Amino acid sequence: MDIRLIELTALTMIIHFVDTLAYSVRLNSVKSGKFALSISLFNIFVLLSRTANMFQAPLIGGLIGFKILHHDDPLNDIRLVILASSLGTLLGIVLIPTFLKVFSKAVDRLEVKGSIPSIVVEALSVHNIKRMVKTTTKPRKSMLARLRYREIPKRFLLLNTLITAIYTIGVLSAYYAAFFVSEEHRLAASASSGMINGVATILLTILVDPQSAIITDQALRGKRPYGDVKALVVMLILSKFLGTLLGQAFILPAAKMIASFYQ
Image (cartoon, rainbow, N blue to C red):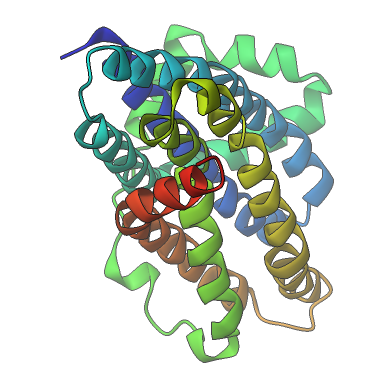
């Protein structure tokens, strides 16, 4: 397997793994009441994800450029990268109970220490790493029982699925579109990636985030039970996973649609 493809799939898994854990932060913020501290600490994980994103586009460009040079359709490699996004999401789902335990303790330590770097250094000690391994918790059906799923608007979950699908294939479809256009238009086609992801981010910010924030804020103020936030997180994560799977169906039509603008 091409080393670029290995690096790309690994980075994609990290990005979607961190994005999945991001959904669970609102659970800790509502349960502990330390919303600002929770967000402040989680920013370090977001920074990791964004850094991985910076390296993703050049790797995609290098991989597809190599395939185009050898007149080889990169679709199978692209599908493998999309699969990595689904696997990263699944890994995040499995590790959410463990992450919440560790994250909750880290928030408490941040309140005492007042410094994120000192928390990171403390967490990387051999003793604390062993403790984190011992706190590993498997997801149980009882964690999902009796949640009030009916209280969560289904329309915005459908939107989250579609937006996740667009976000998953945004960069990939733009670079893949370069395979279908003449050499003079390849740079223009690949540059469309920023526009596609920008549209997905705007839709997420306008249509999904406000509804999630309302439910979380109401739970923080005691107007909703904690179970509603738990149901919200579960539904958002499942819709995100479905979105990555939907990306498999979207990738080829999306690439050809982008290519059509440059033909």
